[in-house]
Length: 183
Ligand SMILES: NC(=O)c1ccc[n+]([C@@H]2O[C@H](COP(=O)([O-])OP(=O)(O)OC[C@H]3O[C@@H](n4cnc5c(N)ncnc54)[C@H](O)[C@@H]3O)[C@@H](O)[C@H]2O)c1
Image (cartoon, rainbow, N blue to C red):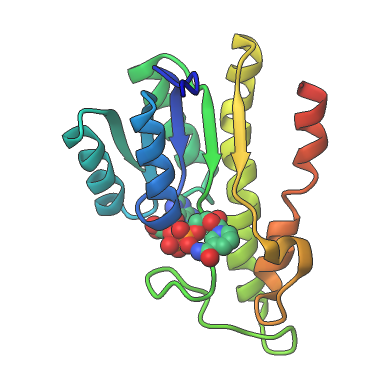
């Protein structure tokens, strides 16, 4: 089945491993030019190399999605190389279980401190906003764009030991009416 992704330019954030990596590989298999973003440069480059080795087109870009300047710089590099951004997959997210990048373990509402809240919101909420803001004007002016936010059941139902993560994921919900308005 042709998904119509041939030569589309797609940025996948947090694509250096697991879910984001698989999204990047699948987009590349469908013919998209994939920008593999990750906080860790080695992860981003290794997935980009994997795509290229399989005959696809990709570039690895290290950028911290919580940093609006780094995100803008990433989008600038992408537009310089590929001319546009057609698809943004806001996948980067942290759960308190990631030992490489962690607010430090599962915590209940009573246990979590301000830093734990900030860490979850920085990536799962402001990261999504930074990346979306960096591509949205270009998408509007080219009259084409797809933005996918990887949410979580935690954001729909809440998880007792992932309270900040759940709240940050629930924060994606206001994006939905925009998608509906945009058609
Ligand atoms: N794994 C699950 O069971 C599950 C369930 C529901 C939703 N999700 C969501 O799916 C997405 C991917 O989950 P995963 O399990 O593959 O995560 P993961 O932690 O395995 O991988 C996330 C990647 O994002 C990168 N990353 C983290 N912070 C970043 C930042 N500030 N800037 C750029 N890159 C950053 C990490 O380096 C990592 O390579 C997340 O948004 C997560 O919330 C995961």
